[in-house]
Image (cartoon, rainbow, N blue to C red; front, side):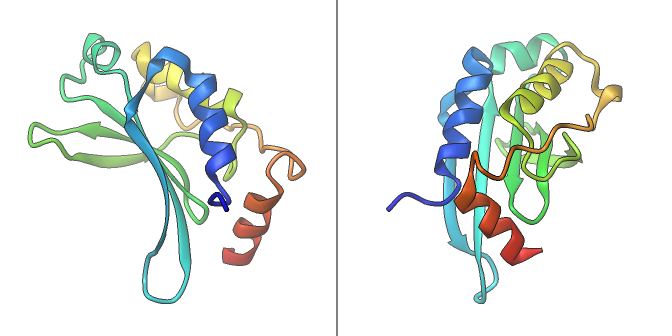
Length: 135
């Protein structure tokens, strides 16, 4: 059985198109504190596009069902830090994520976080149940 957030991850990756580095992006479902399962998504944005707007070490996106979407700057040691909100919607539509990434990759970070539109519960029912259980 697939993780509950895999369809969401795949839809966001598809919406981002060439802005996402698929080889460096992943979704996982793990135990965060020994008590509950945490769905996580990490998407590395295209390094050339990130470098063109002043992020020579890249940009990454991170999502969990408890926090929502964050964006981070890459560091010279290959890590990502300085998490900042990307969109306000917890389970934002792939189109909302794409719009926020467009702001990032055009150097308009002052527009972030975008309000974002919540994905319809019927689109990702397993994910909707997961976010409800952890809120």
